[in-house]
Image (cartoon, rainbow, N blue to C red; front, side, top):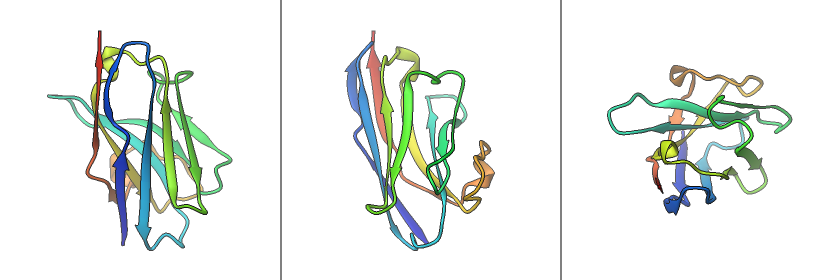
Length: 125
């Protein structure tokens, strides 16, 4: 089992920045691809970004490409999402997730095995 806890959400004005963190605990010795998803009210949870176990490969949704950066520190069991140039459309609950497909960059929710509880990000116009 892996436990994931997100932090760093909050209220920010459009154009601002936030850095989300995800702390992993439990069976973190195994390799996991880590992903970030988000869910806005009344919408399905959608893929935002992913990073392989090695950190060599990343993937981003088109809507955040060039504005968001995913990174990880395996020594600290941490994953980060740096969000710049935030827009009101980025308002959502952001979730951290872990996938055992550590060599791939899955975008489908069903390919992630562990999830955090989420952190709220609100971008005001």
